Image (cartoon, rainbow, N blue to C red):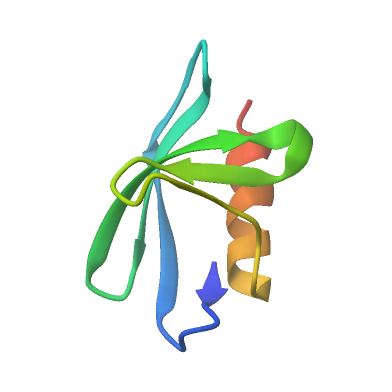
Length: 73
């Protein structure tokens, strides 16, 4: 997807994308960290349960990430 604001590479596990009643579940990684998330495509945000936070794109890479995940709907 590109480079995050932290300077680390962002990757999405394409096989992990699946719909549930909350949104689109997906797995992505930033650097060495694997993150489980739920995308809310209407608002272009995603929720990360491990951090209990909702995020918005803060770099071109995370913008690409949410666009890619939402395009799989």
